[in-house]
Length: 131
Ligand SMILES: CC(C)(COP(=O)(O)OP(=O)(O)OC[C@H]1O[C@@H](n2cnc3c(N)ncnc32)[C@H](O)[C@@H]1OP(=O)(O)O)[C@@H](O)C(=O)NCCC(=O)NCCS
Image (tube, rainbow, N blue to C red; front, side):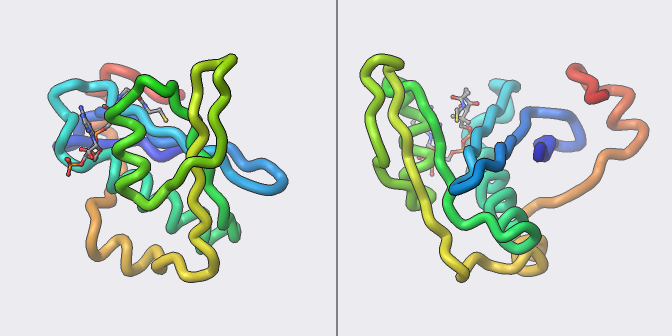
């Protein structure tokens, strides 16, 4: 499942969720450097976890990050993720968060965070068209 991140109507990145039997792997990318450090990644991860929890019952989220990717480790730790395992052979750390059954509702999320849809105009201007 993918949500596209918009910054002032322009595509800036994406957040992806891969569903497994026991957990869901989550990743985020803010490709446009000018769109970084605005809280987009934090908001997108929170929204994706709320949506997946409320809509399909996902509870355990795992982020797989290269261990020298300090911005990403800080991002996920700031959202309450903690170390699950280190995979030295791949140079990765895996962080985990169990949201339990207490995730906020998507309706509450929508009130607090920025959620929108593409317009046809925005789609035609996107640098990275989605098919
Ligand atoms: C890592 C990345 C997703 C952060 O996106 P972002 O929208 O700039 O992040 P946010 O603005 O939501 O930042 C949230 C928190 O993450 C941490 N963070 C983000 N960028 C950081 C940086 N360059 N250095 C240190 N901490 C950073 C901070 O704790 C920040 O909170 P603060 O601004 O209150 O200090 C973005 O830099 C990126 O796409 N990098 C390349 C791809 C990648 O590494 N993806 C993650 C793989 S799962």
